Length: 487
Image 1 (cartoon, one colour):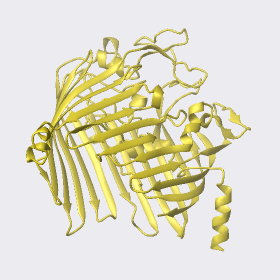
Image 2: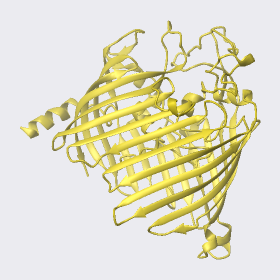
Image 3: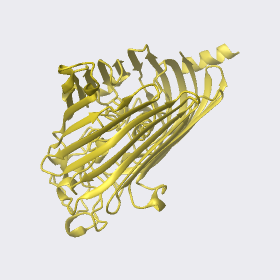
Image 4: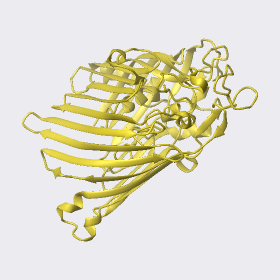
């Protein structure tokens, strides 16, 4: 009976794809808060029902993820069938298959979800496909960047690193040969040329440049012109559903960094560092921090921390290319020293990030960033980060709890909130908040039930909406059955 049940489920999913409604929207939340990725090998399928952008879908999935140590790869091909089409009406292939998933040639590249060789920090490291949580250096310029926050437009990213005892290089291309965002960091260990085995070889000096050379600077209105600061003009779309940009301006950040690994043994790793960065034609920022890893084998407890002091001019943004850059480049939430933004301090909150940088002014800002991650005996992982600076609306919070090791029931909770003011607003569920809660119940070996509820930012394409062309908070859910074999 068990075998026939599993066979029936597999037949339902034969044409389909990747781990269920952990579609790219849900994955984005996990990566933005720094939650660890599931690295084990698995083969499985699932059938789920859930909401995407206000419409009801049936999703059939067959996914494969393989981790052979040095090499790992994942295969996917999501098939989403629209069951209920609420306004605005959408086009489908064959009347039911979600068109947005397969209407561009790059969409077919996502069948190969990713290919990886090596691991970050090893001699050679390469990834092609999804770039979840990509970071260069200490993360003060590119931090937890995700290239596929928009599930309607797939990007096949590339990362390639080389690390030696003499130095190395880290790279990031967000979309292969047609990348608009390119990052490069080179570093050298100067003492290694004198004595490779010396303690002084723990000193490393690096230089980073990262640029979105086509960053949106002004969005287009119905007349084909740049939307002014104060405007009721709606944003407009091209034939592929992309926002039209009237003007662009390169967002380029350069920086130098230095670090020295004071301790590195089985119990503790301790590395202080300093970064000095600047946005071309804008401001500069100074970062001084300590990275630490503590391992207590007696109770099997791992603790990672990152504490950083920051000082920067008003026209500088730390970790400019972060988890939600692909959204923020079109509309960056910001408040000035009076709590508003725009011409003559009018309330305007949807200008492109590069445009906001040019408009920001006022005194320099002091602040801090703190990050903490617990791994408790492999049973649960708890993590979070918080940063805050002078002035209003400058606090950001990330939290997650993952309990993957229970035999029958696993669950997780993930939360992100940005640009809020004061502790009383830290857990307000509004348009500045994203969250995901998920639970999986093991019905029998290989067979499980899964449920998810999440809030994400999605591009509003409803022509009668007051927020047309803006990214708004949307609550979605998914329920389903699946089968998986892990190894």
